[in-house]
Image (cartoon, rainbow, N blue to C red; front, side, top):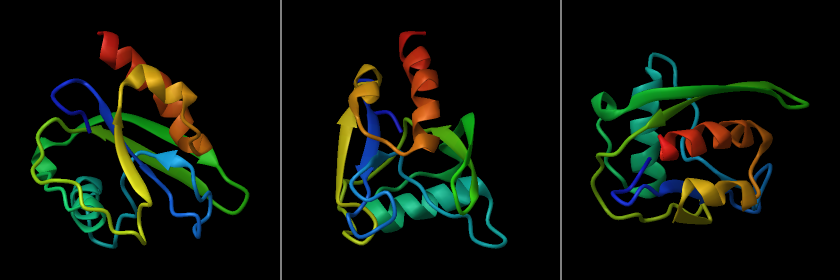
Length: 126
């Protein structure tokens, strides 16, 4: 998700969760019968109280990463239209911040998110 000044939204995983303390792109699991765009829209509302219409999400890239106990295939969507003010669900995110894509390499992120950073940096200079 990009704000009007070109910054991207990242959230910090709660310390109590796997990979706790790392920063990631917001989102979550797709529920049965749910399209990925619907899942992301729902997760943004539940975790951050942001409203994003599924139709306003543009597919951007995918990350594929093998963790020790599962394989993650994660789509990355770009959204520039959203409503609301961030209100954190502390069970889902310890913190949230907007950062310039060029700052992302200095942020500690899970391996699956790291592979998407270069793509976002390329987008920001295009």
